[in-house]
Image: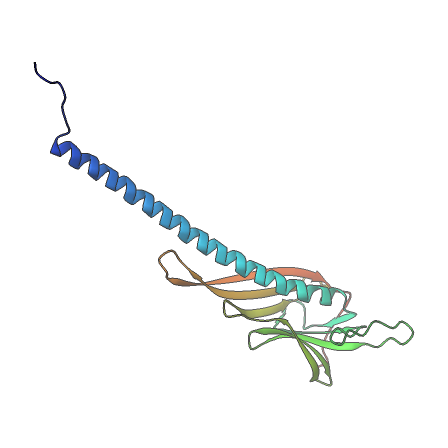
Length: 191
């Protein structure tokens, strides 16, 4: 009697090994691409949160301002000057019996967003509203007064950071976030 058992031939083993290798290679490439996309998106989310935190520190100051000194409609500035009835830096509460107006300036200096209490164009007290970190750098701060909306100020914050890809390559990503703040009144600077 003859046995009907038959094994795989060398050719069948080579073909199946080749197919399995191709499937494994494709799976690894898909996995690496998804890790790269995830790290890129994770870096963008971190930049978004950094820009958003900075905007959330600036906009309430502008909304509660008594007046904002701003250039002509349609102009852009990297510094915004405003006055308010309370001392944000020293936490002095508003006194309705003896109201005092404080002059402030918001600007970008050395990649940090500063709130300065000033008198006669000299900063007397400074507080950092937004600080750059080794992972994220604040690269821009702009205040735009739209021509169509006289009492609106658009605030733009630009943040830059490096993100590591799946192949350990660093990529620089820029992110810009913008919001509009309605201010009570806009005054033009003295000529």
